[in-house]
Length: 434
Image (cartoon, rainbow, N blue to C red; front, top):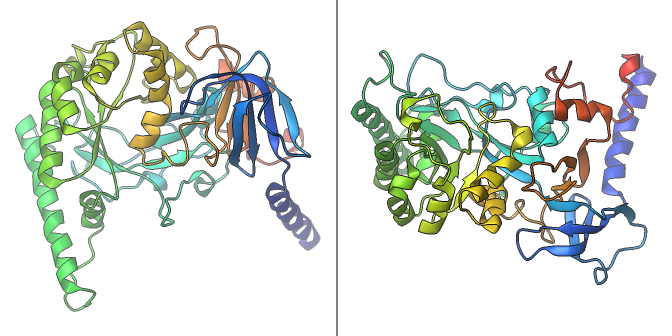
């Protein structure tokens, strides 16, 4: 038994060593849409140790000795898609005890073997903002994940430059958070409860600052207030579910009053107050659906919202809200936005860089540029074509989805077993021997 453990430990050590020494990989001859610049008709993308090391025309881009070469002729390469609002991972947040629960962390509730993660990979999504639901004024702390193949949540985490786990804060208003006591019954009371909690957070922050590290003067530790102070200090972006035009303006009003950064999500009525959103310099993450319905406050949802907001000068991204829309069909969001008047360039930007900016991850993901993470998608055709299929999805230079693999194909197209939890992600894992 001990010998087996030693062999297994050695195997893991060698696997880790192999990653550090992996050969560069080059994808040759494909049409590259880097987002950061003009399309490259016949391009080369070179990745090594999880990063992009070169991108450019095939004839003029040098390829290092010992590079593993992939024929990408007839295919299209785009950056990994960034989903700014998703619920994959069987995620949960706050419960029914209170309308505002900033101490709830989705970090403590995500099932990393949820089949939805593999389905998102099958849709070309490589980075996602995993959120709790919208049934609360504040339902908890969100989590930004890289959709690597992992066995525990730590395998998917993104950390910022300070080593802190990256994530935002989920808030909502409108009808979702209005219900029986202790929840608010009106829009006015909803805003009043939020305002009350942020004032408490300001007071808590001031007490901590005045204590200057003196344990005798520090207030009792309050995890709820600590999380809201992170919002006040700009360390956490508020991702705010909101639909109706008056609710949208309420969010903007609160963000100005307390100085927190916010991304508006859904904004069904955003086209009605596009100039006000633009003046506030607030980004919008929109959902694009072709069969509106479901709630009264989304009655005036328009497919032209993306185009109208973009024309007004708003940073516009898209999200799946999975399972409201399917992660495997995320590319359709951009296609439908173009059909309704948005430019092709801005629509593709909305699937990638715009969302990366909203998550403070623009230095790592969202475009194919030297130095960024090697997150990219290989497509069979134009990204806005209904006939196009995701062939491969790569995260940090490792292939996490391959349509030619029958196991991956099952997640892409559905069928018996496609919604079962994933097995452990281990190289040379023999499923028949388990």
